[in-house]
Amino acid sequence: MKRILLTGMLMAAAQVGAQQYPTKTIRIVVPFAPGGNVDINARAVAPGLTELLGQPVVVDNRAGAGGMIGGEMVAKAAPDGYTLLMASNSVYSVAPHVFAKPLYNPLRDFAAISGISNVPFVLISHPSVPAKTVREFVALVKSKPGQMTMATAGTGTSNQLVGELIQMSAGIRMTGVPYKGSGPALIDLLGGQVDSHVDQLTASMGYIRSGKIRALAVTTDKRAPLLPDVPTLAEQGLKGFDATTITGLLAPAATPKDIIDRLHGAIVKVAAQQSIRDRFGALGATTLGNSPAEFAEYIKQDYAKMQKVVKDANITAN
Image (cartoon, rainbow, N blue to C red; front, side, top):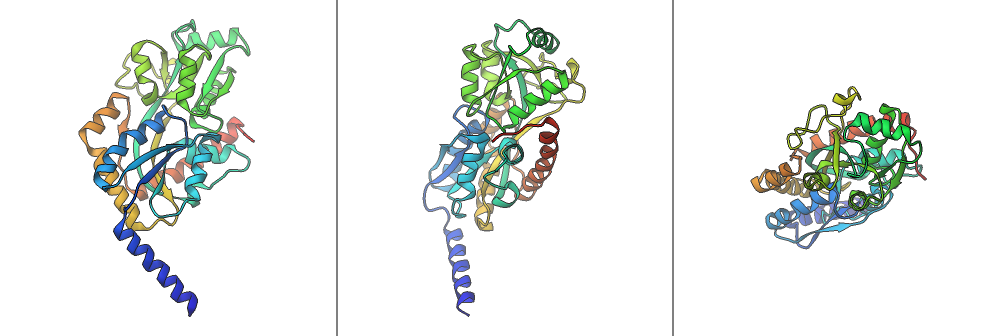
């Protein structure tokens, strides 16, 4: 009887908390360093969420282990809606399969709120690299075995996985250089410390437009509208290649449905704002705003797909 009463009291308290939510600052954990696609998504929607929810929404970068450090922080946080995770395929589909001892299970430890953006990857290089097409790039790598470098956003990230798939498809092998996010990787690419990188278009678009880095190919099956002169990988010999990133918001599992619904409603409104659509569109991304159930189903399917890809590519991390 006491256990039943205690359970009832806890449920009642959770319901009251959900009805009053939010009453304090909400933190969005970005599990990568500033400057990359996930960070851009979080900082783009935070002001709109602040306005709609009536409480400050702040971004907290917690980089490391392919996004698993920040992911674990949110997975273990109180399920009260005040600690959220901005996550991409790296966090919910790739890293859990790459690391021998994953710090969370994305299908068990998180509640989906909404997908926010869909963005292509782009294969980019420093202008000093004497290759202007993928075919020229492949030939160059083959002529300099073990000498060419490819930055990644970190071990166990989707950037690394797509880079590995490009190398496998092209029959080449480069030296991988892992960073704690796309932001630091881009900095070293801009400085010429590394030769190439596979990045989300949102993070690299400005540098491509300015000519500071060169876009060799987009990874989608169709050309990106903002880069009409940049061919796809499939057009340049890697038949059937198609890869994108879907970034979205997650909460700890067991977060009350009322809170999930409140956050989802706010995200949908923010994503529908013309200023946000224009901002993402200028970076080559498409805004989403799908339902919690739709986003959860996408994560489930992508998690299963990436499990096979990681195994076939033999990508592992300690």
